[in-house]
Image (cartoon, rainbow, N blue to C red; front, top):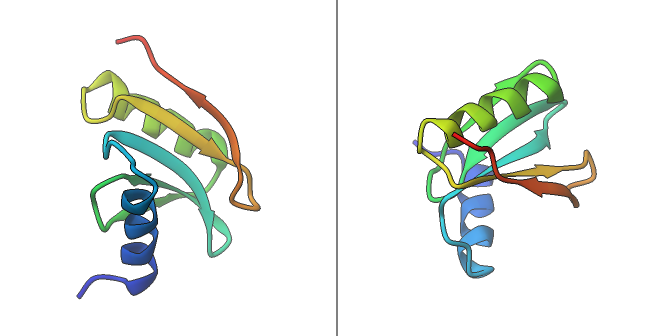
Length: 84
């Protein structure tokens, strides 16, 4: 069964007109997580640095087009593309 909170987050991205190809680094439940648009999964990491590295790896592997890094309050901190 999918986590309703993650499904709602995915729906928010869709409603915002998202391309579905970005990896978001978000703060949830006291941990940093990587959430790929269009999926219902988020993978938690012990630190923001580690989550950003994993999201960047997704871009390098062609699974995402860019990384959106959020602040702990949920607002966007920065968006960057990673050169393969």
